[in-house]
Length: 167
Length: 451
Image (tube, rainbow over all chains, first blue to last red):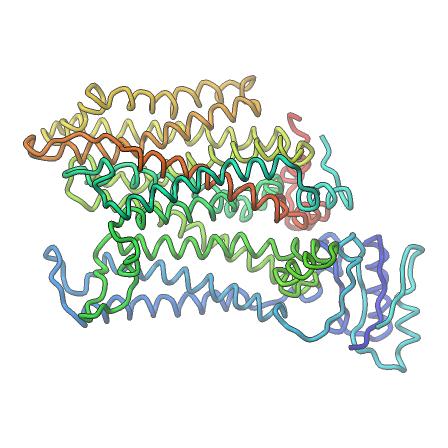
């Protein structure tokens, strides 16, 4: 993997670098910003804010509900047992199992979507610098075109406290 | 009182991971001895059978089920408090959430162990799982014990994930700052986390969803634990108030457990700059509220029983209030109501020490409450002919003691290997979203009030 990036100490410098990259014709989806924590008071932190976590969780919940309904109903009908005069398919107690499986489905789908969507567990090389864990802010572009490199270097060279690096 | 920021914060919170004192080994060994003793007692019980316990007809539920309900209750503080504080975006939650979530995870594991300890043949625990047995009979979904299985496993799964997800960025920090084997281990745990803006947004969304999902699950778990009792037509169990009564009691004891844990962490890991008096004051107020709510529920339960004057219920009522269980009952009232209301109701005594004393009282009181729900009723059912008493034997006492030691040991080990305060969450607090943080929350975030 090739990349060009810079490390900044101040959020303002990182924001200026992001603005510079945009002016150099780089789209938001190509800009990589890496921080040790969310920095929601800066505009750059809103890059990539759209995701489908909620939809996935709702879908997982629905699957859990359907599974819970099937499991309770199927098993009760599979071997009908008369328990305490209750009907064979007893909805009141079944609702408890259905509820628990609905929530479990939502939780598992939510975590699964996070793992896949956030690119966790992936083994391919990615742009990262351990200095980020010391508080630096990384702004860069992965796999830049050679023709565009000088413009990117200029865009990333903002402020006084920065380190320009390439991979 | 200001909270350290930047690299100072990272260094402070990673110190327990990087340096190990001899006290850690000594404490671990000390607690480990209790755990080994507990395991030995359990194996002894498995070998000789339930005759070595004080459990005899008609009192089949004693210390073990008391411990089960108690630990499930303790587990309520963590995830529930953390989830609620996350949803309302309370800034002061940041140093508290992980301390709380860990309690949930470990207390649930310990609590979930008791139904298995309580099985005569624990290796057959898988009979509780929803699978068709050799005779193709599925578990009876109309049994509250099967509800327990679904509720507790669901809550445990959710709580572990709720604890683990926000740990990923912190694992990445440890990974980037270490070398050798430690780097490899934390690298695996970090799951390849980088900290891109997209990852942060997804993590925040995931945590919001988890918070929304885990609150009703937490409430359902203790309601279902209460159903183990209230679904049976037994005096003073068959009550509609048991669901909310148990949930309130669980949150009550859970907050007490959290306050004790935070105070110990603050002292032993030197986290005075992070766990401020305002955190204890806020939790102390919450504990006071729950104490009043607990008193309200007990009054309701007792009044309805007394007014109904049913002979079977009144037998249990009398034995707890003025009979052989009266000393335990009144100790419970003092510990759960009088002590917290007096200490936490007065602002001058609502200090860290005051909160801890009240919390210890609540833990003792809530364990007694669980015991008083389980044992007097079973010993005084409808026919006086079947009345009996219960005396715990050493096996039960050792196992019970060992679980408390196990809880402290697990917590100690966790604090040794994982930052007990979420580093990234503390740093995120330095960059609050202008849209999301109301002024009042920002004020609390700094922890300056009443410092």
